[in-house]
Length: 339
Image (cartoon, rainbow, N blue to C red):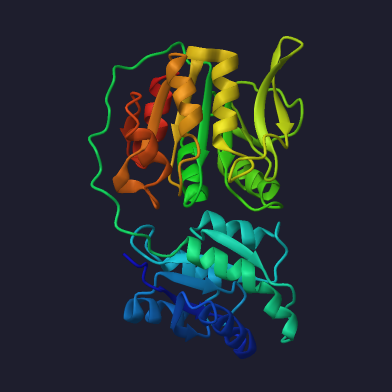
């Protein structure tokens, strides 16, 4: 069955930018631009009227800016939002957009109305197609509910992708300051964002949150967020469990890969690992989750009803390895119950 064209709403206060983005998307032959909007208020009206699959969104606009638009959208059931902005990748607004539900941020090569904007072509089309409608999924299988294994839990490892920034804020901000074990986190973000995102989490959470660096010690009450572009692995050095950053292996679709964090955790701590997979596209984390299960650890997957994208956690929950489905609003409490 042929995949239908992705329906896109283009939102930007620059007429020239709207024209270029529209040309680039329509030129792919796989995308239909169903409308344009000049600010966030008009965009909200067009979302209701046109029901696009994807919105390309500028952040700096009059009347209602991109952040305001994101806040006004429902967390689930709305279009996927791809930010297209000239703001620096590590800017607070770009990171806030991801935390508010944007699925990707694409950096404009210029803020000026010049032909340099056409350089967006390949990345923009590829990103829109990746977040467009897919073929209808097969009916979900009954989730496997094996008895809880493992214990005592010595480490919590979390993986997420699309919708992950929001989900991580909700889970980590609900954990107490005296959380008794360390946490490792892999989130699929573009290079340049993870330091600012880790700082944002640190500011909003009772636990401490840092971006990963070589030899950072995993200690109770600290969450270490993998650096975009490098795998986060665990190593034992001088009697301490520390972060080890690595560019290999290179076969993964994402770097950092959830699989690499989970595999290293299972190898180091075995049954002492609690693995958590949240919302996200694809199957990253499944290979590592199998290793955690084989070592006797515990696995939790975000339940379908709260996932922005029921992909990564679906693979986990349907794998028959004893993963337990947990709605996002209960995830922090369930994690605490295992530590």
